[in-house]
Image (cartoon, rainbow, N blue to C red):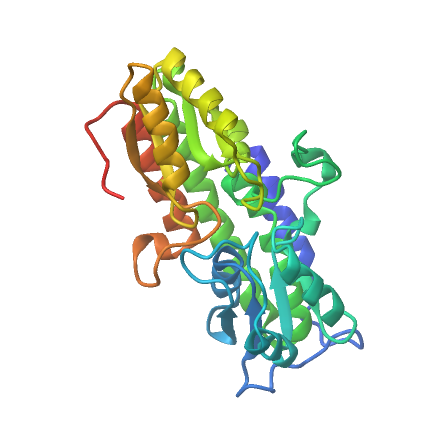
Length: 320
């Protein structure tokens, strides 16, 4: 295990050390739902995190399913009721959930809520110029950063269900080890792309943490929030960049309309260069349950393989 990953694992284990002692600070709420904790999460990424750490000790409802854009999501009356009934609410944070975050903030006065990204130091977060006063929330594309979110999940579950703290500790450690393996795979695969072609072009700026971690230049048509509209000038500027650099592929996102990327592609063609759509990548949402991309690690692996194949120029991958 590398020194950096050992540090992540130590944080995970330390966060839940002593939480199973049944002391006066423990809150044993696990009896409310047949011995399981009733957990509500916002995004699929957070939901999958809780399922892996919680195992059969938790019942998890994720409010935002496949293809859902959290930047634009508004809580329904049913969502609010599910949140109110939860033993604990886990959400991503860093303003990813936008209006949903305001609802969770209000509920935090009466029940446990955890922003899993709150554990990440500010100096490790990106602060884009076009999103003043806030950090880029898409931290899950850096496996080392998202690995840090295992700790607050494990700690809160152990606090609420102290009798099973050892189980949470063991699952958290095993899950962190899976992150290390996939991180090494990502480094290996992205290194196979020719240096001049390591440019990832998508609809919105969701992949900057991936770019920083794995050596890709990242260009998004929209800002880090899909609530930001792209204009004609943005399309033409990005098209000029792609044509000049001869970037072989651009990518559509499962949670964002492909129209904007198609407009960029047409503008590139008008400049005499044919860029392909390299496939679909997952940005703000997981894939369908039961599919490989229906888990966080499966979604990341899908993105790694889709991006590397297309940017290496291995055939036409325009099925989307």
